[in-house]
Length: 177
Length: 296
Ligand code: SF4
Image (cartoon, rainbow over all chains, first blue to last red; front, side):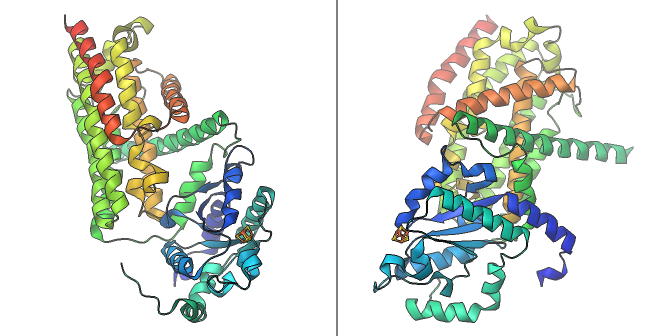
């Protein structure tokens, strides 16, 4: 519905700004989160690319899932994702989000993140080093510029698919506000 | 005639927003350099605002919207009473006290938005902000009354004109202790580091703005930009003698802002009750001593 009102030129300007200013919400349950502080601070300083940490889901553009997700935290991640405002992007971080990594046969973690949330970009590695993380961010920027990072639209279009997958591991998702 | 007036108001508002965003960018760069980082480009805040206005936004009801607009409007209204360089719209007496009152409106707007959002972290944040206001306003008001007494005028323009005629007439020289106290109060006014308990991002997730996303956050960023301009301009007018030339004025503002930023970039933060206690101890004593010296 929104698309009608946004002329493509305006959208380009927004994409241009969006690319250069990304607020990141890092969901630090996995062990890979330990690589984020060096990425943010003096050594690798990601703020020179216009990427900064956001304090709450409402303010964030990127949801960074840093590693394995137990089924219990998946529910919180889904809430967090749904609270974020559109254009929003999900980045899977570490092999745990790709195929389960070293938790591939665990009974209480999920194996493949993009069954539950529309992942725009994966960073492989266990755990990826700050250089790899920055590389990932630069790739994401390129995707945004080209209008390829459309995960949030996909989530709306294929809502049924994601919801059934989520329900399979979580049971009925009850929302209490 | 009326159109010209409206244009004037609009121009000043837009100018203040642009200037405030520039100051924010410079501050981010300076903080980054003190931490041995490269830091974002100085125009980063412009991009942030543009991006935020391109995002979707979710509202939490009428009070939430109204609060955000009231915060923004309150700050803009304050701006019109603060002279920037030789440009001023009002010069009647009492503007100084009016500005102090108007500044509180922005906070009350934030408080309303907080109530509308119903987020507990936001309430904690805004209650901290209002408590802290209680702290820094006391010494600040004492210094302001001293200034009104010494320069015999309660309008900002009047105080500015009383300092004309060179460096030695500035309140910085005549009221040194008061300037120091007012500067410490300014840190609290702007929510700079030792006194940034209201927005503590790591503990209460950025406090009052916790529920503001997308366009709302963009609006509040603009509000913050204007508030920076208002507060630094007020300080320059009161203690650095204002300026007849806009360029000099901007330079002085930048000086004050950089000083506050540098202090903010090396200090940890006070707990809110510690902050209030601190304000009621040394700055208040300093302000009272200054008042006694000036009056007798
Ligand atoms: S990918 Fe490796 S480092 Fe990352 S969460 Fe999984 S096990 Fe930990």
